[in-house]
Image 1 (cartoon, rainbow, N blue to C red):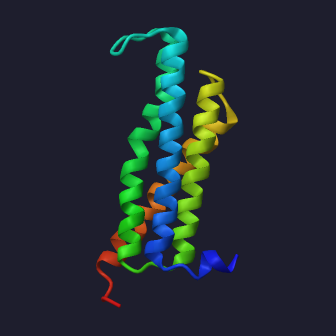
Image 2: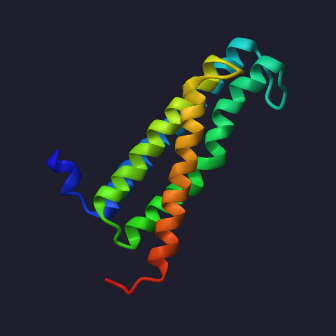
Length: 138
């Protein structure tokens, strides 16, 4: 456990950006495999493939902005524990959301927890950035 708490804020941010890039790559591969399986030409869709592509597109809507926020938190010198908290929460939320949406087009617990978790991370990142933007430099 010490390895995680002996990181610098920038190293912690790099860890979660790396994990989120891996999640995004996994979603890209997932969509590509389904495109091939369903034989959907590029630019085309079907109702089934629309849901499959939403799995990736939902992450594309949220992950880049929050990765930038996590990097900004690190550059502002936020405590490592805070970066781990928001980073881990975001990774778990996005994986749960993707699994929930991939398994059902209707209600799923993973999708709800993932969506709520992502919104909580938005508030945590935005709030910390706004507060610390006006704090005296360290």
